[in-house]
Length: 555
Image (cartoon, rainbow, N blue to C red; front, side, top):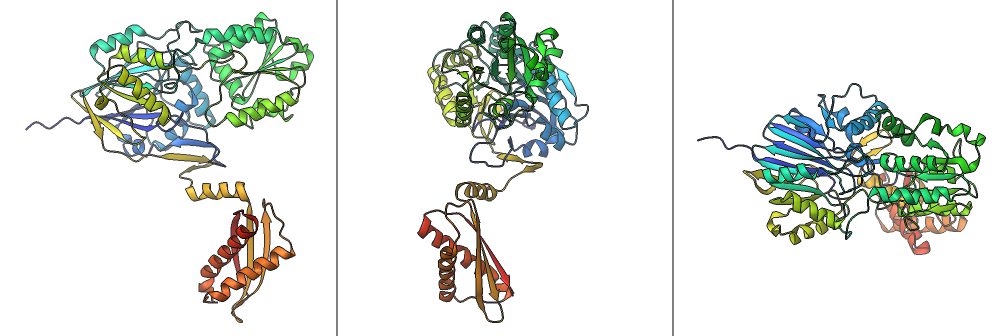
């Protein structure tokens, strides 16, 4: 009897629980391809964490199958995990992407001293064969040049992955979505469509990037002094429009912020960003030029505390400062969770006397993701048999699934998965498959791994209520506590004589009630009694719960 062929497996390891850390495994028998390897920035519930990565243990466990990594475009939520993944892989695997994306990745890998990665440049119309997995690339429009979608053929069926996209008819670089290829692949048959869900809750069409240019020009032309524009450093189309507006107003351009300097350099070298050398000036030369002849492009559109805009607003930037009469344009929308940080920066700028433009005031930003009508158009063009929404929070995935139902895809042909769950395809028929190990990995300083949830809980507790240390001096000879000393950090009450005497009395009362073994082996029970009694005393008197650190010193 002939051996059954292995199924095609689609395993999302990230991207289905928030906007970011996108990573999807395509596996068929002895061959495996990874689509994207992104990161996510931490939220308020993850104090002290620098970056959040998807758990790619499954990729490492099956490294012998990995034939290549395909990166759809150059944003951090699709490329940011690559340095960590490549450091953990024993073999060098080829990375396939567009010229600009590879340029950005190269700069990122150089920071990590990862030498000679195997880059393979592809573009819309390129075709590659990785084992039994055949991949065709097609151009898409997004908020970065060189965005690609992929059409995957395997012995068990076909998959189309859109990458991040919107259907922009007037893109800045003239590269429109490749509708002809999408329709051609649809005729060949799309068994399963994976499509970007970020704006699935927003009705209508997303405005074209070209509509931002006139608003930027108007703001810059009417600014009496210097203009500071904060945007994503990888949003090359936006940067091009800022530069065009600056030139039209006879202003020189200053670039500041580490990622902004790096990305503008890479984009200029590769021909994606067109700025003449004579229009650029160094930040140190800014004082030699009249204020109404300057535009500063900087990072900080998300209110990041260490970004150029935040440091300038707080007077902490080494070369530039913002003062009354300046105009600040925040040319981005806050990523979910960053709204408060962005508002703080806007308030700081307002206090300085700046004129602040954001998207609530005028059209200085449009999204790079398609809204509901574009998502429906993609479903109409691709005509998939099965559908799985990707790249979004739970609300976005479900809204996208609802659109698919309206487009006539049967309920049992739509799959809303969690990270680590899988789909299996046999002969074009898709079913749910077994789950694999998944989750999140924290980058905490130089340490990468599973930061213990207890550590995060402790950090939140310290941030909210502070800490109190209780040191009990225990006499093992007399079998009693001789004294207790208290100290605190970040608490709202004072550790004075009254507090010390009453808290000590509470400890003594609890110790008298219990039967404690006053030996070296009995100190754990004493420590617990110390913690509980101090915690209860503080709660009863202050209604706060600081972290209690009990210390037992034996004499």
